[in-house]
Length: 151
Image 1 (cartoon, rainbow, N blue to C red):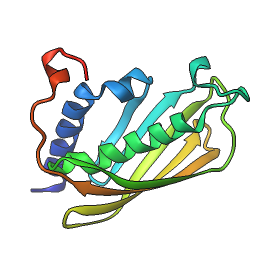
Image 2: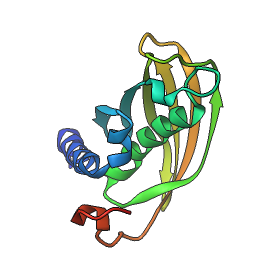
Image 3: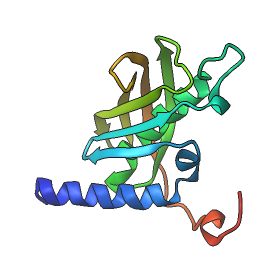
Image 4: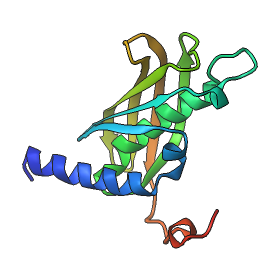
């Protein structure tokens, strides 16, 4: 498969996954870019994401980074999940800031992979560094949520 065909397959798989990703969409994330081994997602920090200090709760930053990793891992064609992930928070994020998560595959071998995600503000200020490890899993049975039922 040539590079252009591979990029088209990755985009189609990512768009199909995005259509089912209620968590990322529900948090206001956007799938901005997708290519083999890379993905970029963004999200505006809302009032509902503020912690008791009035800044963005780290869990939302982690969720953005985790979703960005998912869009690098899963368009390969095999379902995969995070096996382990860690994040270092560099600076606080304010309500109204737009966060951008740039994810990149570092390695993939067999059923495992390692991915780095850089989370920054829209103007490029580093907010957090995330490293995730993936593991492919058996294909999942049809999701009840896809049939109109909840979790």
